[in-house]
Length: 156
Length: 291
Image 1 (cartoon, rainbow over the protein chains, first blue to last red):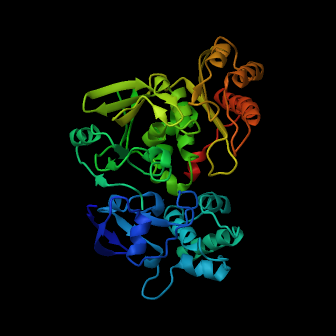
Image 2 (image 1 turned 90 degrees about the vertical axis):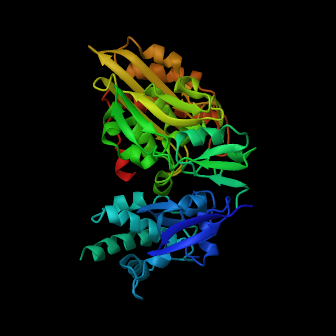
Image 3 (image 1 turned 180 degrees about the vertical axis):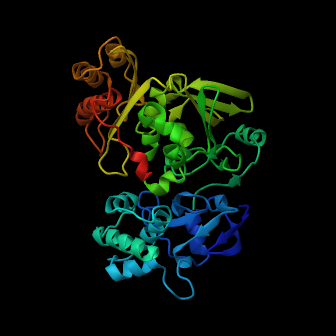
């Protein structure tokens, strides 16, 4: 099976990966020790594998790694800066917005993309923005509160 | 790991159609259908990525809107001209397809290519009399979407790429529209959806399109209901009569989402609600705010 060389930015670093044609972006992330994005449904229905590709939140389970050539990728591992959590991560911790925590990276990355575009969201907008993120523990109230809290923190 | 033996990323259309001429290859763009639904990988060993062809454009020219094969659901949902066309029915269909993460990757041309009866954008495209521009090594052909779909996952597309979708703008100023989707959750595929366009002159409907999704093997033009609407005043009574005909015209199946009987009844509900929007009897949704 021929390997494909892809060159991309991952969390601010330029990397060159050798990937297989059938390898998903999520599989490539895991192979390169970036295990924050989770495989949950594997069919694009839950957003647990969410990452930011060229500024937009996407599901890394239904994209080929080969398609990420030239991309600028941000994963949950790249959010904290100099050992300091991102305000969205802070807010999720403060609100206790995780139960088992498996879906949390997907929620946070989706919230990150959303807040870039909507710095002053209403609760309704936050709910719509997170509508694709599925939590099997069914804890939706606190993530919504966390995103509203993060929005406030990011504005000040 | 998917069973894909080779990945190609051509940068010209000529290269692309040459690659596609060989059996066992298929097109990948957003990948959100192809990579998760085994039905599209039957007989496929190699994929041809079209995302480096510069087809992510949306432009209005020559009385038509051209939506390139790379244009995502999100870009279509957010496009001001598409929001302004016939009550924004195409923007609204794109805005309710899947989740935000899906809409950032999935393309409208891909939604058409997948040819699923439950798809969110084909009813609006059909109601707008859209065409698909197909390219292969043999050249280019323009196919009205009305004759594009053949069955679930089946279309007239063969070893071809949808280069763009064309939506006529000739009636931009007079075309009214409505769209209504019924689904279990915000993210789920449609149980039933309905898209309509009407031209109303001097209080009479002079042209009507009414298209139902998820209630037949293909996105279904309810032609008998369209005939019943034409020549009538755009009133509740007219719409209810048309909806009754719609319920007779649809050919739904039962599955884990809904029974055929439920889908049949909901077809009438979705049709009436879409028609009311087109006639100004009910407000339009502006789902694109959450796209």
